[in-house]
Amino acid sequence: MRSLNKIRIVIADDIEETRSLLKQVLTLDHEHFEIVGEAGDGQEVIKLCGKLKPDIILMDINMPILNGLEATEQISSMYPMTDVIIMSVQSDAEYLKTAMSAGAKGYILKPINHEEVTDLIQKTFDRNKDIRKLKVNVEKKETKLVSLYSFKGGVGKSVIALNLSVILANKLNKKVLLVDLDLHFGDISLLTNKHMEKTILDFVDDAVDDYENMKGYLHNYCTNLDILFAPLSPEGAEYISKDVIKKIFEMASEQYDYIIVDTGVNFEEHTLFTLDHSDLIFFVSSMEMTSIKNSKLGLGVMKSLNYDDEKVKVIINLGNEKFGVSKKDIEKVFEQPAYAYLLEEIKPIRMSVNRGHALALDHKGKSTKFYKNLLKIAKEL
Ligand SMILES: Nc1ncnc2c1ncn2[C@@H]1O[C@H](COP(=O)(O)OP(=O)(O)OP(=O)(O)O)[C@@H](O)[C@H]1O
Ligand SMILES: [Mg+2]
Image (tube, rainbow, N blue to C red; front, top):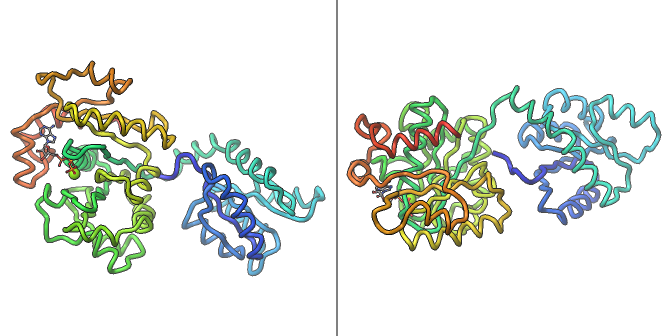
């Protein structure tokens, strides 16, 4: 669920000025680097590492409480996903050897040269990319963040988000958190007939700051599926900042196999943040011209955000070729085949919406093509 493109960095140096200079330099290249934390001593950096799991730590040697070499030794054994680059004023080979035997993956001399440091970070990261991937497979499975997004309302994002979550949880035995981030007009509480539950707004009011406490704000809808509901009225949205969303993802990460997010049709900061950090975006369109036109524009925006093709997958919902638009027409307009088609099945879906009961939990619902196709999507996740 981490940023797929950016290298996440922690800077550890006891001199504030050095940290802020490095920060300035690396922020110039904000498309590639993200400074996720700073520490002033060795103990602090170990703590931060456990919390933030950065890709790279830029580590000074002479720091109070615990020096950089000792911190490196602990980090390389405790957090093998993080690579340490030592920053030092010492250029002799002995120093370099000591740093490397403590587990450092790179060494750079102070004063730090801009090009040298960015180059070294990138190279260190690239060199260990494959090893990191292997480690992920051996270690804990990372939480996958999947968003449902569209450029036109009413195309079925919420119905898909809920039923996909139920299928993953109930049928495929995955641990799932469904987050309703349509902050103005969230519908998941309606679709599940739960209006009395706590919402993301209560979560913010009570300044929750760890997963154990967060659980009190989640509704357990069925086996393996927790839901965080959107505010019950539109005014609530203004209290939910991007930082709140970040905190939720951080707290929930590693607790779930999947976080499924139902987004609103907007470009607000929290939506863009979610899309940026998603592993996968299901971009939903219907087969109606107004939706197709907006979706074409939307897919252009996804490209301009530099999301790669693998990250954005088109789902055509309300599929019905009887009304003048065929699958082929859509492929032509989007210049790519859709990842999946979900048929228009008015009766079972409208019944489940009106009853506030997920179709995927219902015996009859499971015989619909809508369910079968969603199951196929869920299995491929
Ligand atoms: N495959 C389908 N077949 C028939 N009806 C459907 C299908 N998918 C969704 N619907 C209907 O479309 C309506 C809109 O769906 P939903 O609320 O999930 O869309 P949305 O994209 O989340 O809308 P909003 O932009 O308002 O959040 C639902 O009430 C449901 O009845
Ligand atoms: Mg919706």
